[in-house]
Amino acid sequence: AQSVTQLDSHVSVSEGTPVLLRCNYSSSYSPSLFWYVQHPNKGLQLLLKYTSAATLVKGINGFEAEFKKSETSFHLTKPSAHMSDAAEYFCVVSVPSGGYQKVTFGTGTKLQVIP
Amino acid sequence: GAVVSQHPSRVICKSGTSVKIECRSLDFQATTMFWYRQFPKQSLMLMATSNEGSKATYEQGVEKDKFLINHASLTLSTLTVTSAHPEDSSFYICSAREKAGGRTDTQYFGPGTRLTVL
Image 1 (cartoon, one colour):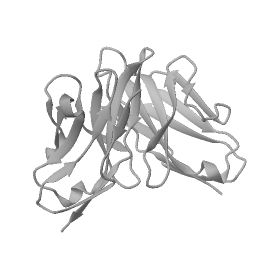
Image 2 (cartoon, rainbow over the protein chains, first blue to last red):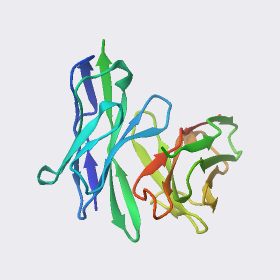
Image 3 (cartoon, chains in turn orange, brown):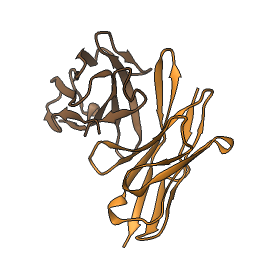
Image 4 (cartoon, rainbow over the protein chains, first blue to last red):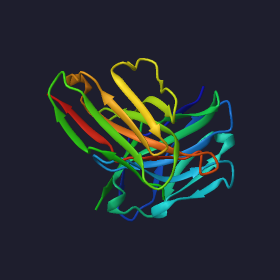
């Protein structure tokens, strides 16, 4: 079985300061890991994904995440927050299961950006 | 990137009626589509996985006779909420995964459908 833990339900940063959204996972298999962003009343947009290639993954809008197997982490970072980054962020793990990919969502982290 | 659409974006219906939600992959073929439900301020809950041409696989606790899923083609899946009740009011989101040989690991999400049952 796999699980995803997003350690912070809310994160508040000032505009222009770095962003760190934490995600830890557990999985019996080598997982694929994703970060999605959801703006209010909208669907989810893929930010980036890790699928056993480079451990440092660069995504859209200046976000990146580093896969650290020893720490079972996949934290999302951005050097400088923008007002438009305010949204809910979901960390997702995907592992093979019965010929399919089983996907598990984290509980989400709401990012607030203060002007 | 891959685009997934949902229709309608919002629907309000009376208790006891049925509502159909469509999910389409616009620029790729989706072997597998997923239906999620999201309650306010909560994460997504997977309801079912549907593979083109076969019956959907429902998650534990999801009533398959209430939430009918059809995946008739590689670009279209539908979710029908039958005999809807106020407790079915929620945000329903679909996602689609490309046919094998493409970016098979990634799910692309639709914009969601807000269902309100009066």
